[in-house]
Image: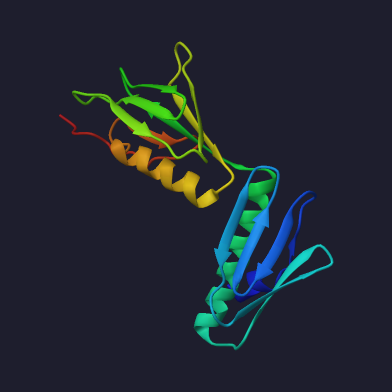
Length: 181
């Protein structure tokens, strides 16, 4: 992880990075994110780049160095471009629709699952005839959009025999052979 931490993070156009005490705040056109920096890591802004340095060569400081660099990079990319996760509903009768921030999923249970999403996450559902429904989640916070996508996937995980369930677009499932007569 220490090699990742040594790389400086370039600041995109229109993004403002400020450091106060041990908190980094990143503001951009899509939103604002804050992250508390762990002890032993110092953050500086030099020449439109964020540079992180660690206090010692201990294993913990090396791991935190790479982690904090990756988190700051994800924050800068998030407030400038945004993050998107796409989920595909594979199965007969599986449907998805949304009204504003409410996502309505029909996943083969007796009742539909209605999920109220955070205002930072924008949801869009695509249902074309002959294709599986797709749920698109977009946000400037990578951690939040990943957490929401994992929660939706957790309602009906893809099973290994037919591949039915909620999966990420592009996810390759390990398939098993069924019983042979």
